[in-house]
Image 1 (cartoon, rainbow, N blue to C red):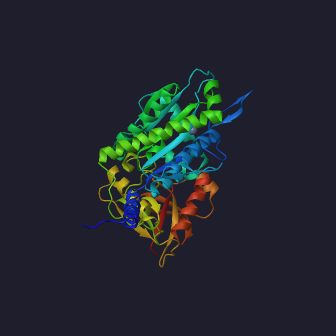
Image 2: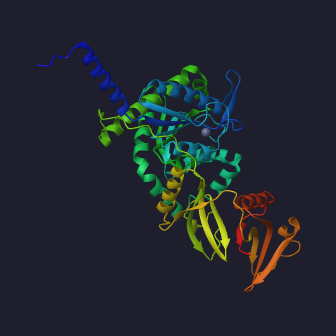
Image 3: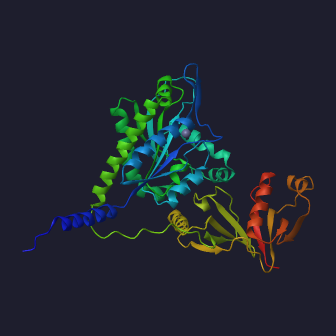
Length: 430
Ligand SMILES: [Zn+2]
């Protein structure tokens, strides 16, 4: 009979436990401290507390929560910011999507619109059509930071929450994650309540930051800055610590619930080799949604609620491209988003960045119409050297001549800054 000695047992145990720990895939949590940098978020000045600013409270809570999670080997933590800076909402969701995280948590501080300080307590939002008008205030406040970022400004302007198409696209995109978002949200609010806070519950709201993340996501309003008790609590180390602990416990319970649901058990199989970090692709990829003889503008229902659409006119037809990325994972997400929104035949098209056209050039179509532009029109007053053309009874006005798509996008942006909007980049073949 084989008698194992102490050394073999030790070696066996070592191998056993090494594979044990490796076999567990880390559960990635993205922590997003709301606002930051030039965007202070909600704030209120109190004679004894001083200026209580949302951006500082959210960072305080997130750093404490992150430290708790980092101590636990089952978790990997990604921060959208760790200092007082402002990543745009798109940057924040892109960070989350690229990391293929399991959970996205955005931390905020509320404020009620009126001067009265009666509103108090916590509430947690998951993505979805608004349940009631009251929540619109939160949507406005939390989305208003968008207006600091030009790119985001376009995104939000083109999104029409009241259009049924938008809502359908939204639902399709979110239903997959909604259930899990509701689970983690209810744990967070449950813990707040248990620890003596006033919980306003879990609510559905149409928020940019939740809408664009491809994972279960919640936005936690940790209290009202214009309620003295809430503000004093959130401004204190003790209050931030307690808030972080409550969210931490909710994440732990959520992970357990998800593991049970998916039947994910700890297995002692061979460790999978670590995947190398994703490298950028040589090409930029845009998703071609459709080619149409008609020009649609931001927010038109034909665009089905998608943002970041770049129409490029070629041979009199408008090609509608959605998103741009040089990351394969984001390209896949963009394609899926387009298909989910209803563009079943959409596909990814590669663009060589800064590639000069070998034949032809790009210009900007600044106006198309049955009527001639008057010499006093804003466009003709603002721009010199506008080219005009007439064909089939329509007047076409174009501007500029550049040789790369990047320069054309830049030129289009310059025109927009001058107040000339809804222009189209046109590719000319001679
Ligand atoms: Zn906020």
